Image (cartoon, rainbow, N blue to C red; front, side):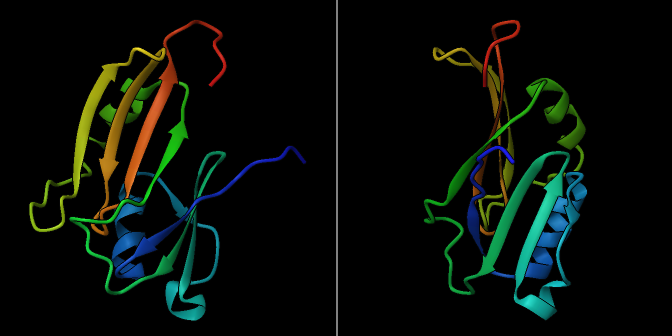
Length: 128
């Protein structure tokens, strides 16, 4: 198996987190949140883990991770109707932009305040 890392992000409510990420095409690859008090979510080869932190402040948490994809624009288009901006939690979808470090990048913030940056290489065949 190739080496890889999986982020463990805070969730103020695992059921809310599960429902949010299911709308983005992730699936629960573990037990129901009530059984483990923990979530393992996957979408293709991407995996995110969540642990309960009921007092996480979604407007001040610094939790984040990066998700490499083949086409950030396609992911943004797929997620556009699934994310409703919520000023109370900061949850939102940020449109793609080209970065000076060679990535086409967008972002989503979930209801617990986790920032998931999503990027694809601007260079054909570039490593991400």
